[in-house]
Structure formats: structure tokens, C-alpha cells
Image (cartoon, rainbow over all chains, first blue to last red; front, side, top):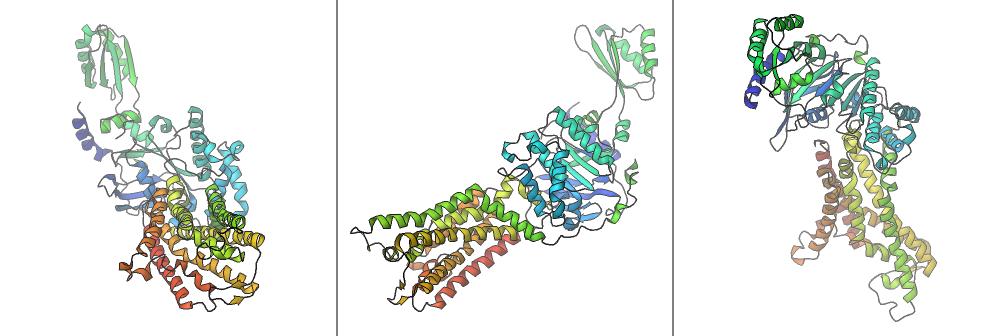
Length: 345
Length: 295
């Protein structure tokens, strides 16, 4: 399958896959994040974000996925009013951005393209600075809230150290603490697991679950699909500035074809293909491998895998291995784009 | 697909009351900004360096005053050994062409570009801080540094001058003598005029600072403006544009040491600064409130 062909195919299937809610009221408060035709063309002419219709329902954990350079961060910058869209519009918590920034952003915690703080100030002093800049936060509770946020991300012990002495993981944690300085209705976390070790990644996932359970909507972006996939109730997949697909994770994955994978002897490849075809499987692909083994994959659809193995055995096809590949987001992404997920543009 | 009708639609929180601005909010932002600007190590080093100018100048003149060199230096320097008050004026005179613009260029050029380069700008903006308010806080911070720079020279100059040479009645440039009280006031007025003369440069630096995320670039450009202005001011062929140059009236603080200062000249000097401030702060505002923050 060539790249070009697969991309055409993706373009062909995308309209069916795209879930664009057709309600006319984009400012509807049912959406925590909503965009319509959001586009950013840089002065260089490069289109970083190409007319995307993002729809994040309230209470969702929305995995905003895509390889590096697919336009996730630019989208997030537009949502937060940092970058002016070339075309289209964005709503946060039902209010138009960037016009309503002053009213909306206090209810939004954000981690944008990695943490950034004053290097010579301590972690706590950095939080105090953000706190001082927040016109609507109660200064009397500032210290308490900062301490609680530091505690929550496991940084209380290092709060008195200058930021420049922090490890990458500690910096990321301080960024999360800043996003949690106040109770939020929406958290926008751009690559929150960058630089974290596996334990830190698990902690972030735990934190996201906890926040979501408390009713906070979370928009979390990542180029590492597997790190985030498990916590998401919804996903949207970006590639080359376009939102290829979005929707509930379960539904999206369920739509993907389940494939079986049969390992047999090279000599029996032909009969294996024939048996699988007769059993009602489609898209049967023989993959002649080494001298000892060959693989056949096929789409299972509604066929019972037990019936398939029984048919193989009846036809005397040696079964060296037989497996059912549960579909994953990664697989879906590859099918939509013809690329691996971690490919940078 | 259930996206069109989210199962988790909120029952209550639709119009959550808009967050209310706390009293004294801008004051808190400003205090935090001033602490950051004046408390950073670089500022302390620069201010200390400026404060050393009158101190070293005073010591050099003190050590050499009995020699044949005494009384032969240029302008105000010759007067210092006779009256410590002149140490302030002499130090300001020495710092004005380059040192002071350099320090102020560093502080004002860094104001926005520094935050952009560390990435903290985006986090301030999503707190959220309105862009106009943030720019205003940044401008006040840069002005505060300029004031601190002039004050460092003036205060240390006054103290060192008084300690080394004593403070007497001033014999003005025109030969008249004024009593100590008025003399001190006049010298302080010189410092204030010098401080106000720096406001135009602060505005220029602030504007450059909004153009880039490379603070060094903004700093260098700002200092260049001061230098180019001083050079143009030296070319008689360009006398037509001299009155509008940023640095043209900088040394007119000497007017304050005449019996009857020419207020028109001083007024002109301040008016020019005001014009530069108006133009460049408007440009800075126009740029900063519309720019994409992609750092």
C-alpha cells in the first residue's frame, strides 16, 4: 500500500468518520470546547490548523492526539486567546474566545507547550507571581491554594528550590500545579507527560481521572497515544492540521475492523487463504514470511473465531499461531493517515 | 455517535457567575512586577555599577586634588573638589551619553521579550492578565528601573560628595552663589530632569521588546537608538531635525544650574520626551495587544 494511495483512501473514508455535531448553537454551554472552521495560516503561508471543528462535551476527558507538528499546540493557543485564528471561531465554556478571555480563563487551567517559569525564583515564588497576576483570585487564600496545588502534584518538598534546579519532571509538575491553583471547570493540558518517567506518567493519568471524577472537563493533548488513550472518554485525532476523526473512544474503536492473524507453514499458505475466504472473512492478506512460517491476516467481522480455527483444522492447515487483534486507536490512526503515529512532520 | 448530545451535559453550572475582580488587583500585579524587575540579580549588578561611578569619580578626584590636575577637568568635574554637590552633576554628566542608556536599554528591552523568551508570557496571559494591563505593569517596571538607576547615581554621588568634599553653597555657572538648601534642591532637580529625559528611551525599549522574543535584540536596538540619536545630533547638516532627536536636550540639565534657568529649553526637552513616549508606547500597545504569542 503506497502512502499516496492510503491517504486518498483516508480522505475517502474521513467524511464518514468525522463526527461533526450539527447543532447550530456553538456557544451552547453543553460544550466545554467548541470550534468551528478554526484555521491558522502563518505568515510563512504554512497552514498549521486547517478548518477544524473541535467538540469537547462538558465532563469529558478528551484526548487530543496527533504526531508532533500536527497542529495541536497551535489549536490550543487559539483556544486560549494567545494566537488569533486566521478564520473560524472558538468557544470555551460556551463563551467566544478571545473576547471573553477575562471572564472564561479564570475557570480554565492550562499547560501550554511545556512549563515555563522564572528560572531564578523558587517554585513557590513562581506560583505566587501567577497568583498576584490573577485579578479575580482571592489573595487571602493564595498561599493556602498554592501549597495545596504543590502538595497535589507531589512538589511540596521542592517548593523552596529555584526553578532552574528542577528536573524536567519537576518542572512539568510545577506547570500542573499552576494549572490547579484554583478550582477549574476546564483543564487544557498540552503534552502533560513530556519529560515524566513512567511513574510520573501514571501519576498524571491518576490526576486526570481524579479531576474528571470531580466534574472538571479535561482536554489533554499528546503525541504519545498509548500514554493517554486509557484515560480518555473522547478522542480527536489530528494530522497535518486537520482533525481526522473525533468522538467517544469506545465508539470509534468499535468501528474499527477486528483482524485475525494466522501463522502457518509457507507451503500451506494457499489453502489457508482459501479456508479463511470460505469461512466468510474478508480482506484476506497472505504475508509470505520466512522459510518456516507464513502469516495470513483477515478481517473477522461477525464470524466466530472459534469457527475459523475449527475450519482450519478440518482442512488440515497447520495452525502455528492464531490471534485476534483488538483494534486500537493507533491502528485506526495508521489506517486514516497511512503513517505511524509517532512520525514527525 | 453521542457527541451531538453529550451525556454529561451539566445540570447547573451553565452560567457560573463571572469571576469578580478583587480590590487592589492591579496593585498586586505591579508589586510582583517591581519585585521581579528590581530584585533580579542583573538589576542589582547594573545599579551597583552605576552607583560606583560617582564613588570612583569622587575617590579619584579626592586623591588627585592636590596635584596640578586639580581644576582642569572638563565642565562640572573641575568644580567637584570645591563642592561635593557637583559630584552628583558630574557623575550624571559622565553616565548620560552611554552607561545610563545602556542600563535602561537592557531593562526596558527585556521587559516583554524576556518573558516571551522564557515562555512565562503565555502563562501570564492565560492567568488571565489583560494585555494592556500587563504592558502597563511592564512599562511601570521599566520606568521604575530607570528611576532607580538615576537615583543610585544621585544618592551615592550626594553621599560620597558630602563625605569627601563637603557640601557648600553653590557658585552657579553664571558666578552667583546660592545657599546650601537651594543648592541641594537644584542638584535634585537635575537628577529628576535626567530621569525624565530617560522616559522616551524606556518607551522605545518597550516597543522593541514587543517585537521579538530575543531580549538581547531588543536591548541592543534600544541602545542603538540612543547612540544613533547622539551621532545625528553632532552633524550640523542635520540641524533641522536636531530639536526632535531623543538625546538632543539630554544635557540641558545644566540650565538648572543657572541663576535664571531657561524654562523654555527645559520645557522643550520634556516635551520631546513626552512626544517619544506617546509615539512609542502607542506603537508598543498596538503591537502587543494584537500580536500572536507563539513563544
